[in-house]
Image (cartoon, rainbow, N blue to C red):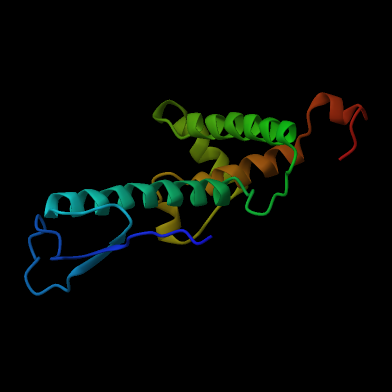
Amino acid sequence: MRACCVIWICRLASDPGHRSAQGRLPWYLLTNEPVSTTEEAWKGVMAYARRWQIEMAFRNLKSEMAIESLRVYEREARLKLLGLLTLAYAFLMQLMGKPDRKARDWLITFACPRTGEHLREVELPFTRLRIALSKLWLASPCWFVRRGAWRL
């Protein structure tokens, strides 16, 4: 049995609120939601833009936390991994705050220095901070690793 779906194609002028909308190419919106007014069409465009922002945030999070290619299939293992990632992400975001800026800047300079000006001026050097913390923790293992309870 084949599903039937109505596709709406809307031709929109460039963003009407944009100053230089004159002379721009029109936008085409392809949707399965009924669209009868310009306002409804722009609501669809804005909903897609918000969805795209969420997708980009997840992509960046996976990249910054170095978990792009993990294969975890069991539900319980996924929940544990999500809990650990949430904890690690919260810790890194805590270090991004103003109160911890001196410690963060020292750690990045010490363990993950960069010479390029554009890399030094990044407002939130999340990836560099993660790498610097990894290097620091590998160089100074915790007490139970040093005592031989765990092998790295």
